Length: 215
Image (cartoon, rainbow, N blue to C red):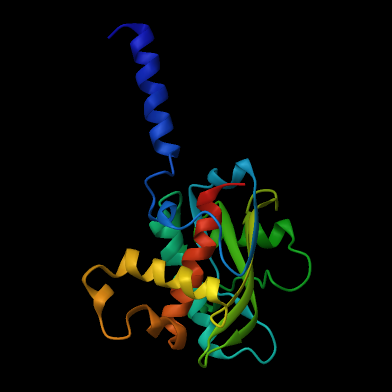
């Protein structure tokens, strides 16, 4: 192969590795519903392996909201940018992982997580508000932090309320794109409006979308 063609082939291969156009979240509408904001740095794609720690729950937030952290680990895995490790509360306790949600996140604490999980970055989140009864709603903030230097590589905040018509339309589209043969099932997408587990899956996909969408 000629040198010029070899260089071109390598460039195309590298572009293919970082191309997010084929990930499932590109099928979501460009404008997230409700209140969704995010900031992504160019370094967000650098980590090879990312640990998703159990999200902390604010006072008076029910345990049903804890579904969001494993759901987000699945969404991040489906995004296909990073190798993703979901850390359950029991596993975090066994590993004696420091609490990264209380106060400033120190580099020593991040290094401890890196050594325990073998990850380059960690996802930490806090659920500020959750209503598990119809109509369901959630408010949360999530951050990806480098285990090497403590830099925040990506962050997102969501406030999704199924009483909003734009959120309902978005859920309907999300359901139809992912439900396949179940799209015509009784209740269909409307079941998400009253099922906390399914709603957390939707919210997790919306969070992952912000990472796949870039800055």
